[in-house]
Length: 328
Image 1 (cartoon, rainbow, N blue to C red):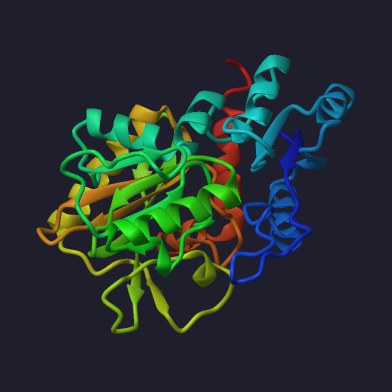
Image 2: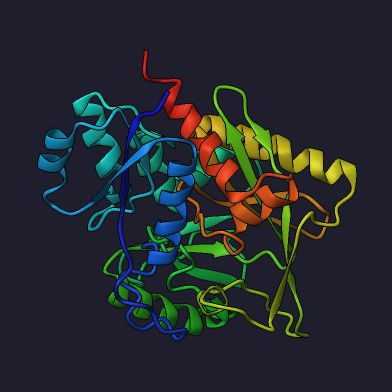
């Protein structure tokens, strides 16, 4: 049955530089991505109502009253920014795609996600939070460490130089990151293993898409899939999907990913990042319940393609989960 589908998003108008400068809209979606998603929704017979997530969104939602919303809005400002649109839609009683406000708020905070993953028995590297960069490190935290903004996505603030091998390097990197992003940093033990990302889709039953490995092509022993590598084609990495993993490794990744997905309260779709340590153990790094959906580019779309799901079918399947909630 044709529906009036609201499409909530944040459009990227300031393109970040590979150096990380001007990255304030790095997580927002390019016009090409928005157009591809809009056309995919329309191809399933629905009318699309475009609703950029700006301060006048509440009034426009009340005025247009869509039947259901396809949400990819990242929000702006504060630790709960990704939860802004879902919370508003819940207030108005409009079903929407993806995880709810609680799950989006929880997973945006990398330390909260790690603590919950650990509570579920999923391995995750040791870590701490530094508020100003001067706090002492807890006993047992081992160098090398990696410094990340606590509540950013798209590898914002993460480069090769984020990996530090000494106290001096740690303090310098931490203070610079806190100053730039105006938030605490996560200081995490660096796992020098294979980097694998897992895509999950479904509700209430969830299935794993073929895992994707980020294959590093340089001889540098410090391997970081950093911000600069995600801004366009690069000769530093190759994305391999399906990843070349043993069946038991695939099963361990699936078990860990689904455990985290359910513990966080995610639904419909999400991408979870892992590192395989020296013993081949999957170490949870973070979860993105609003993964990029750029055709033929975003990791989630590449994993879907490897499963035989083209972009329009992928968008249609994600939308179908929200449509099923119309009568809830």
